[in-house]
Length: 351
Ligand code: ATP
Image 1 (tube, protein in one colour):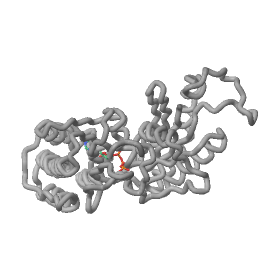
Image 2: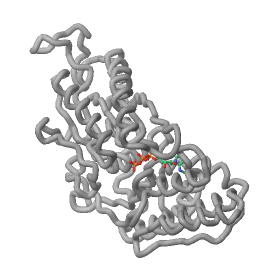
Image 3: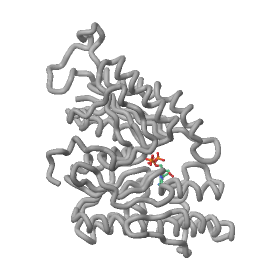
Image 4: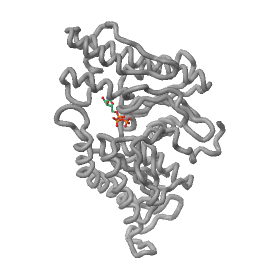
């Protein structure tokens, strides 16, 4: 089967085509870059409005060029007409990110997905963006039942599967991990996104004392961010602050990830989300996993930051499980939690 995925929860206007026969994922993305400050919801929605039609058209062109009929059937002529007299659809379903994310952006993506589903006469699949961050790691690692650390812009979760749901074992009590880093870099006057700049500056830094806050299985980033801003105002070298931010924040994530592995008995960890592109975080997680004999997998960067490839890949699994949506039930949900999602595509797997 071939699925068109559409992503637009925050900054990435992205469309992808996933072909389950070849496992090929074609992704076309157009990033929103704020002129100053962080992500402005209205500007981000305007970006979606402009860019989504473009990226979708490019992805559909790719689907048409590589079109050889629905998977499992003999190749069809591209001129073949469907029963309604239209050209056969180049994809079997439209998958879109329903949430969580910025409401104005999600609504544009939802409208585009519904329109395409109707125009191409193919089903609609509503994908939870956080579960997609997790599933792309499980898919690319070919893991059975991993714990997932989602380290993204607006979120931070430890997730594991149990009895038909992904359970949230630990999460941030305040801001998402990437957003916390971006708030510090805005204070310093660096352009968005801040994560890569902190990573580069940290190379020349030394440790200074900053808060480290883990409570049970949850973590908090607001105290460390205030302390980092204060340290900057007090003229502590910015390289030292960046180094220490990384050591503490990623140490917190690694500590809870280890506890989640221990609690679940899983020996597989996957990483998801844009902050997962950070080398120091990957190094800490890899080292922790090696010490306890667990396998660690970080997907390639194009699958870590927001992208429609992960929406299309999970969309394909949901479509195959018959987990499609009627248009009237397809409203978006800015607060859609990963543990709200019935995991239809893993029903027969051992828990
Ligand atoms: P969510 O998936 O929760 O909706 P999001 O839409 O903001 O989050 P992601 O693409 O998952 O987006 O992550 C973006 C975040 O990743 C930004 O906060 C950015 O600063 C951070 N980031 C990107 N590269 C790095 C890096 N090398 N080190 C640390 N953080 C990084």
